Image (cartoon, rainbow over all chains, first blue to last red):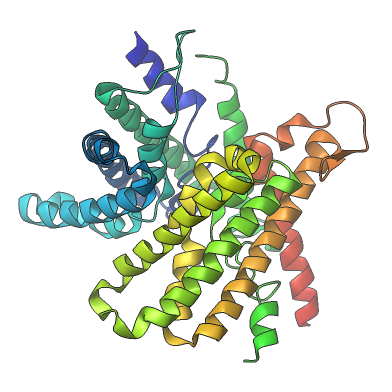
Length: 200
Length: 196
């Protein structure tokens, strides 16, 4: 039951893009076309889940036993950077077609704050669902949370790209061209997502 | 370019938020009030100046191929120092800004200045550049925070001048996008007039 609540909360209620503001750079940067938005979401989904798994294990089996939790920020960003490099190399060898689809987005993901954000969130924040006691996530919950969060990222990204494709065909006032109209669109999308609040 | 110009260019010409559109995540997330926005700006300024200086000093010794990971480590080190300093002296602000303090590591402004300026200029110039861009960022965040605070809760820098609740949506997520969109448009108009 708690897993279902985690998934619904991460995708709709606390959407990482529209209510927590993490990963806004790719959200504004590569949402011009639906196909690139899908590619980016796929790559982010893959990296967030993997990175959270690895950093979670690193936190509880290396940093905590050694008593150096303050090294979190440095350790996590290095792990993520290394992981992204490795994923790129493995993907190139194992599945060239997937590499073709995701390839150009992978280097960008290191500096996507959603990845570091989720990795830090699961080890520093206490969560509570359905009126339960606030507690730190265990490994299973962390991975489910990370995966659901990245699905939320993908959902918002794809919706937003679809909207932007339509807006590009319309007449927009000169001063609003480009980023400002995209931000106004994002604002309305965020308002729509506010309708989900209170669901969990 | 003179030192003064290096410091002032971050205000308008190369304002990281309004004209370069970098570092959007903290810009939107932490500007629920003017004080919060300013704190986030100053925290970034701290990291920006120190990492710019350190990168400028070490750049000749870092092999070109591993420069980006090396910069990230240097930036992460200063962010960790910042976390300690804030925990010690301003625990309230540290609590409010929360996750966005460690996330300065992945703020594109900091890495952007390292790559575009600090690695090919002197230590003093890099410090001035970091200071200038940092001040521009702080200015933008304070302004956005102020607008959202006035509209959303009827107060400015915590000083309440209208009774009641204000337009609550401006404190929440949609208001952040909306307020930033209109500020960018305003900024574009003002700078376009200046250019004529």
